[in-house]
Image 1 (tube, rainbow, N blue to C red):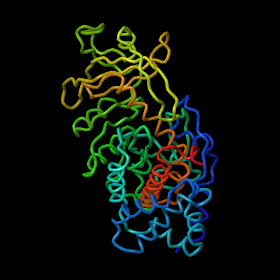
Image 2 (image 1 turned 90 degrees about the vertical axis):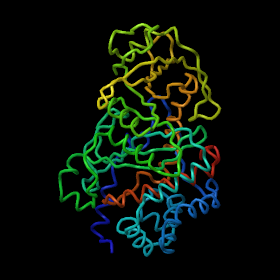
Image 3 (image 1 turned 120 degrees about the vertical axis):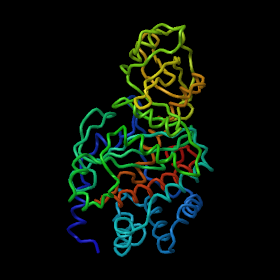
Image 4 (image 1 turned 180 degrees about the horizontal axis):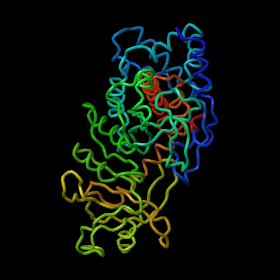
Length: 421
């Protein structure tokens, strides 16, 4: 039974001014935030929810578990306000349902991983993803008892915040994107403090990771799913160690398109280009010295239906030292300009060596699709709304919230709730 004190503490912990973080977690600077909607029955197709639930919840052995999972899924979609267990229970059955659903999410023994695997396979069949986009999720918290809570830096927001940080892997196409896997980052206090770990039921195998290691790990974990085709992984490596991250993905045979900083040093591998033989050079210097290779690339904005843009882009063959193999790995450096008179605005490093510049640049724009779908749908289905404290409870909630996100975007055909409301 849920104690009143614990419930009150959890609710107080979730009450925090999140205006700076809540709506901008996935938002790229310069991408105007979309208006966020509450989901309505008219926007979400009941048949889509039923079909998805049947596919995912077949992993439960017991009928009562399948029923509770379906109740929770529908509560995430249709309950008003924050998608706490209390609000979900109010939508599906009141106080009795609250106790039952709290046990189902926080105290039960079911494994969330088979549901994630089934969700990935379902989307592989129905949504034709073109890339896997890995992105951070920042979850503000006022208290200090929720698993993983610490004072953390959010690079994309440019400031510190108190809360949890996780990395999600999204199946992304031009029309829609859905998160299928998650990894919660455990700061050092949660790794070293055995009492904290025991209280939050953190498993033994969960240890210390940098944000970049956490991002790579969620991609490698997804690559082990037996029912999906490996797609290029898009991830942001500007904040950390580029070489180890790329080497890990290469050893697992996972193709990668990693965003890097202007100062990342690479070796020009094309004998015909300036900088060949000069040793490692900053990415920006390499791109600036090869401006003659730039070509206009027209692209449709996945975040803004019917909006088209033109960028200048070029690719240069480079190499990067693999720290474990002790040899140079061939890579392509992609640079993008929005203003030909100014330096490039983005740099990407990939092992897709035969990719033409135009399709490669368009592929990177799928990160904008994730930004849109998170802001418009992910927030509404409660990806950040779990108010409990346990590691397992957090994973169960966000798994079912990911399923709710899938039901919402599949119902709207990727149009977005703003277009169908």
